[in-house]
Image 1 (cartoon, one colour):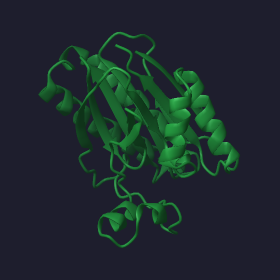
Image 2 (cartoon, one colour; image 1 turned 45 degrees about the vertical axis):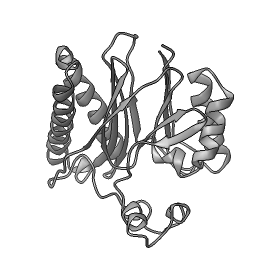
Image 3 (cartoon, one colour; image 1 turned 30 degrees about the vertical axis):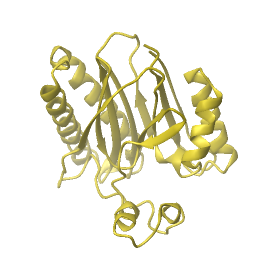
Amino acid sequence: MIFWGITDKGKLRPNNEDAFFMPDNNEEPLVFIVADGMGGHNGGEIASRIAVDEISSYLYNKKEKLYKEDEIKELIKEAFYFANKKILEKSYSDSECLGMGTTSTVAVIVQKKLFVGHLGDCRLYIIRNQNINQITKDHSLVWELMEQGKINFEEMKLHPMKHIITKALGIEEFSDPDILKVYLEKGDVILICSDGLTSMLSDLEIKDVVEKNKDPEEICKELVNFANEKGGYDNITVVTIIIDY
């Protein structure tokens, strides 16, 4: 398995409120996280950093349990709850962070299975057999409108309320994250990204970049450059994982 991650503040934002985490070796279980912060004077970047630090620490401190499916799912849920608590504590103790929050998508890979925890609109895709599949569902107002048949997928990108998130870390009325499982196949490409990428590029454009490159570092760099060329309106974070076994 080979992987790479990159984050960029984009062309318009003064700072980068995204954060990501990836392992420093190839030893399973492997944990990957992308978080997109929001709110406060500089609260967004603090919230996203707390999320990736606390979730990764929580999972790796209990990594001996990350081989049993029921325990993996429960641990991911617990890690989100723990991170939510830490973000709230920081928000209450620092007036400049009041109201901060973050979206987050977490991937745990073990024994050719992918477990995903998800809150918000960071996305996880799998590119397999020349098809791109969005595994996560956006927790956003426009996604709900699409599911209700009031707008279509393409209209979501142009909708004036496209940035309204319905679930996130850092709020009192915390909701359980979505927990998903996918069986992996050799050749799968897993892509985890913030909405700074998906607001600029279509799924087809993302797939084309992935299929042109065999190196995860090149995929990440080209996707970020492409999003910036198209405007770079938001921070952009991409983590790419290639399953080569």
